[in-house]
Length: 283
Image (cartoon, rainbow, N blue to C red; front, side, top):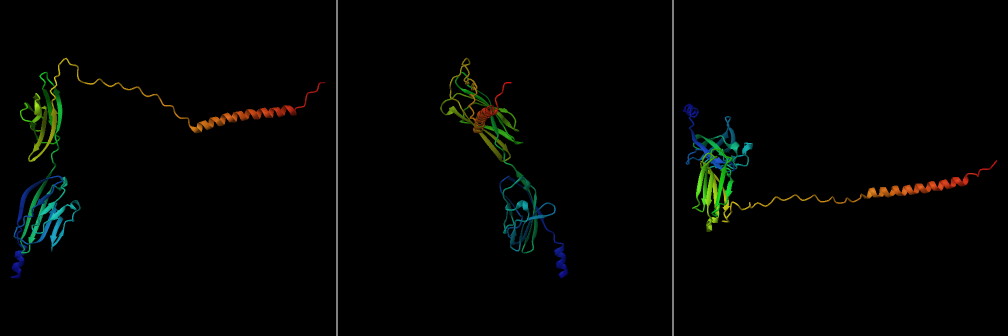
């Protein structure tokens, strides 16, 4: 009988399941399912990564450990009831396959595999004014261009308020709406127009808004351009007098006084020499 129990334990087949792929974004949190039956009372949970089954979180004898691997320290939370694992502050390096091995107190065992996909949120598209003008009829026309630094996105336009004539043009970004042309005559609320460019990829989207204003002023073709004349550069200011260094002044005054002193000393010594010389006698 004992031998039969041992053989059953050795030949026990552990069911391996897979919940497929789970997607999340950089900086967000994601919860990975252990695949354990809701009726199980768990006695052991092992979450691992890589082909060598590196443990990152475990539950054994009621003790929960989530600091096993340095890349996940401070970012894991293990549910003791379900065995599910929550990863916080996701980064691109977290994208890999995770294995959950759960065992119930009744000896039931299950292994679940989950592949985590980590994506970056779309960046806001860039709106650029290509052409803007004020026709003779007092209205405004503008051509805007929208571009995105992300790949595989579709760009669309939205203009508020409604009723402004819009002409969409295809362009970069992977979808129609790379450029948009507007032409309208201001009338009350339509003096201001908000043009929104939205970048979409799957369920993720990002938008940028370009507020436009048409004051309705008439600009004739023969009117001088309303561009201020270029500013002439101002002449450089005259060099300010540099203060005389006090050391130079002292050196100069010392030289002058030294010169006067030398002259006086020469004069005194010369007079003494003349007085000591005896007068010449005539033969």
